[in-house]
Image 1 (cartoon, rainbow, N blue to C red):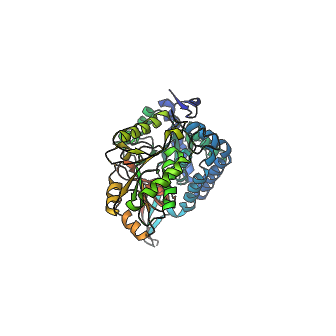
Image 2: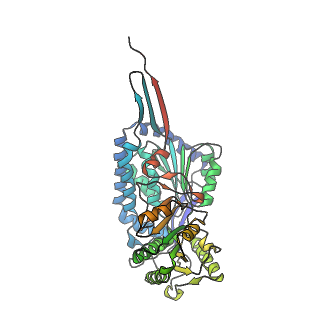
Image 3: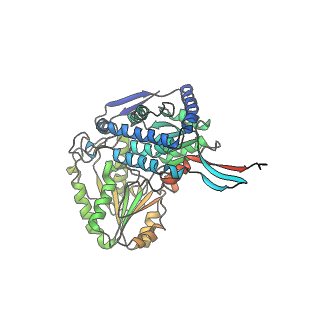
Length: 460
């Protein structure tokens, strides 16, 4: 079996790679497990230096990576790739490693030494998505390696070249080949490895159904898993908000990367007095977009990563319009629309009976609803099976924090959106998943506590 990446630009084959057989996969795991012990025995400072050197090697490839990403998943080259966030996250995790992994000394007296240490899980499997393939992977790869784990990276079939790039960079920097490996695995082999307890930890970013498959495979093995799955992230604009800033940020959060962002904005609730002005400004912004070839520096909106993703968004939009929603963007202004190229759309007169306000869209469409007060906004924001982020817009920080306490979500933003702060835990609730990455908590999840109760022998 093989993995084939079809470019959303023109349907051409970007790359094709054979998947590992079960026997070859088992052998790769065995080599990683053998190499991990020596890696963990190295000084923490050495592991940090090697990981940061690998990150720098990825940065040196950026001029090649940016158009390569455009061909694989469609993001316009004008945005320059992901290295800024990639480096920021790795650098932060390197900077906090010593404190996050430090021993917790309970007692160190003449009679006893009692201490809690953080020890690596062993071999960590990272299953990374295609939408931000470098940044999502480094969230786990960097702290896992720094903590002393070996890592096997399985990338999405839409971005198979990313894993190859990353491991080549890290190997060139001095990270041993068996400590950080890129693998091409089919779903059955992946599930079989997890079920066989091949890994000490599994981190998966992807669909809800993919997360369920990981949990089924891990059932009964007691293998810890981290899952970041779907989202339907809301924005709430209060009557005292900076309207221009709210519109600019929320619409960018809804449309950037053709709406294919884990924490992208998919529904917006606006205080009734600001509703008409918000919609008018939002429409003006979207009408200024240029949909086209992502390799063209003038393009601001590229194709979605796959035709089937675009068709799902078209279906949600079509159903909403049939049920009474109003579309504000004229298809005549986006003649390139078709196939993987999907025009952006703003919908009003939407309700939560419509799939476009309930199901994950993961595309350049957003529904906007007026609300009368905070209670209605909270009720609507919580009326979702997902919970990744929520974006609140007001000049009153205390009000925002009080509202945030009532929202079922992993992260609450005030006056910003669609950003991952590596100092804070990246987490979600409900069908968005379980666990948490980055921050000190990321290190806690990528290691296990080990307690030492040492009774010292008395000397004569």
